Length: 349
View 1: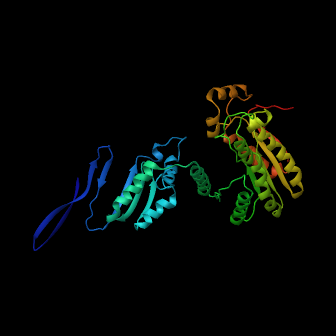
View 2 (view 1 turned 90 degrees about the vertical axis):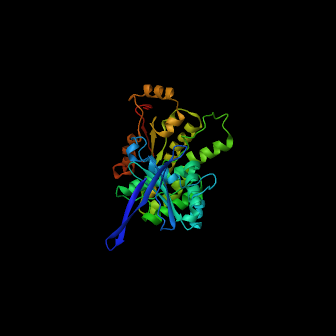
View 3 (view 1 turned 180 degrees about the horizontal axis):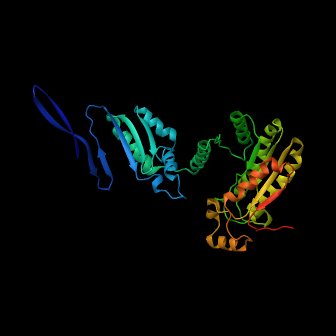
């Protein structure tokens, strides 16, 4: 226990009071509790701090503490949405927030002392029973990328979109125009891959197959239909579709969708050329991403690498220069092409 010493008195007579500043207690489960009595104040601040921050992160996990900080506010089993959590804190006249530093991540609620139990219940529920809903995780990833772009000095917005929906793709294009004044470029990169069900064309569930094709094949067409008219208003533009070397391998329904992407690229290039909109595609080979790691077994990855003319997995950085080239004026007379970026996996005469 630490004490604060108060001295007071008159006419040369003084009294000294030792007032507790804070007290440390260790609970039976090992959790350390620090209390700081302030009897003159009618409110409480309930903090939970964790030994998590940038100092503990590796290159692979960089930013995970800040990412988790946001996710804890997205909902729990008892309080399923962020709105439910905030409504409960608002109802007791409290406020809550969090912070991430180099060594600590903290979560806190400030409220009246009589509602302390509610604050502690909400905090413990958030930290012990967060849902980590996959949809919310994807939204948070998108927001984080946009925030990093803004921190670099550029402009960016995250817009949630269902590429299989005509109304959603149209709304995404409208929001983009409202934010930036128009559309010049489009990269059709959305796809179901990392969570793809590994089954054959003969056995795949039909509803799943249709959903897969709605996203992986038709999504690029719907996004192009939404964005191309806006490009034409600005005198033209460029579109890059994300294909795959699987398109040349007759590789199940994933390869089928990517083969269709190649055909779509050529067809759109012919349709949109008159509006000065170029359409090309990149066909990546095996690329070291989270999605590939979740789908392709390690043994098979080694066999893939061994078969490449340049025997290593690609990285996203290997794809960026080709994408930027196809979007740039340096490719002003190139359209309808599918360019392999694959370490020599596919070689066509």
